[in-house]
Image (cartoon, rainbow, N blue to C red; front, side, top):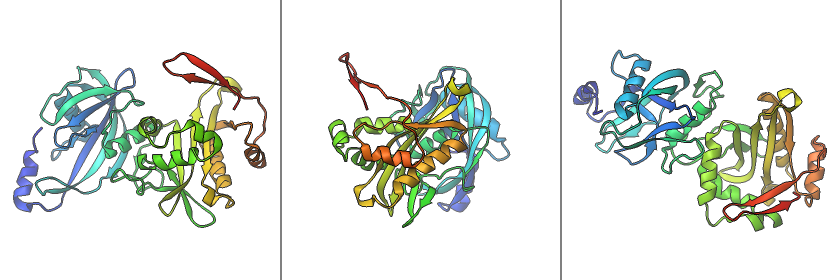
Length: 342
């Protein structure tokens, strides 16, 4: 839809001055769990359906109106997932605005997704593990928050809801913990951390044979799936803006052990420059605490048989070498398979 009449009237009085408005965003999913996205006509980025509330308009009514006007989809609201103040934006004509945004979860009821006005050039449904390139950072943040919805609305700034990344960088992501000594910060990873993470994973004899830090295409695709999945946490250790450690924590449901959830720890790395400072120990202990907080009945990990020092490290932290692990590598597209005992 074009700029609302009330905004045009205000601009006649305010000019380009900062205008505070209320906005709504929809994370609409269909029966497959796919999410509804549109490619914006003004900047070419993909994003969630969003819009400005008219004066006196109820947020739910305004959201359903925006969804149908922009995409032709009729939806039903399920829950309020998050509330936050977005960073100030300056439009190409010089107008300045800032929005209080209400992000809702919604379900598809009827209608085929299509370009239904001049705000979008494309509209479509996407699996959460195959999001399109060029997804706007604010939409990625809102989507991740909505996918992690556990019945509690996330309020930005409450110390729980997670930080709003104003741009593609990760510096705005709040710390999950501050480690000792030296104030190294543990935080969620961002897309711009991927190169450093792969460098850490490749920095040993085993990783050097499996990774290719020179081509990040596949890694960035994998990161997008991890970042959008509420059952995945990819974290880094940040020392003054430099990534010096990483760990991936996955939450796995299962029927054994009376249906206990499991925390799976993988890809634990600390840079050689920062070893000997108990950072790895604190990183793993954080993963154990987070698994317990999420209701897991077990924390598990695998480590290569050749990593003898790592075996002693995990045993010292209370892990037990209780099983013999087996893996099979799959060469996608060739049908070749090979066993790995790692």
